[in-house]
Length: 203
Image (cartoon, rainbow, N blue to C red; front, side, top):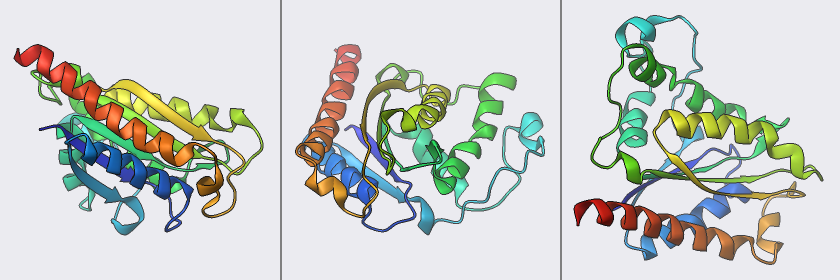
């Protein structure tokens, strides 16, 4: 069974990226995946302290919601990250979740540990959904770099991204001619690609 993790990064309930994520997760379920969802703003996630503790231990010394989140980001076959762009990067709450994966970086790059299952690592895929209020398609450039690094750390081959600008109003994405349908289809295709990759190995 393909396991998909949806990360809802927006602080705005029922905002544009949240709507896109719901459609993508519907598509993933329709394709046969089991789905977990994290609403970042409903979790206690402290910012990284830059203390260096994890470079020695591979663990973060802070005790908050991240310990459970690490289990999901490392074990899921696919991650759908949905977050808005603020000042040309990910919004602060989502960026905090990404930054707190510094301990995973330490495990992988310094301590040379296996952070994901070697048997299914090749099948891991990611999907990035984002919206921006700016009338500028380059508003996503900074966020893309962050997500690329995040997915690369998690042994995820970047699968796809859906980016919509001029989406400043809540729910504006619903008025886009294809956005909701595109998100649903992307969720389906993400699961299909993972399933094919897993099947190729198991056969």
